[in-house]
Image (cartoon, rainbow, N blue to C red):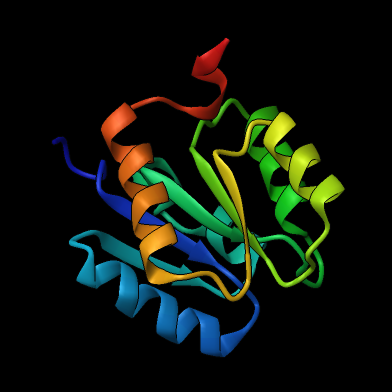
Length: 131
């Protein structure tokens, strides 16, 4: 595995999620960085090293889908796992069609998150590599 391939970046405006989720992801054996906003993530030096993005859908300012669009617009291909408290199946399907690997409804189990991350890192595929 090359440097950065196992780096998971978590972007969520909820402080409790930014504290708990990285701890869980570290237990799975991944490196992890947490960001409080999409803008903070974009301005970091972590973007190029991120192997998977765990991204909240609804955030103040730039939303998760807005960040996804910005990454696509700038040619950055990072597999995205969306997380959301809004159990909206239509929104989930729209996010998947837009290239997300998964959309998990909060609260999700550790097993589901682990399985999804393992799929991302084992496949080695970016979301748009499926066409």
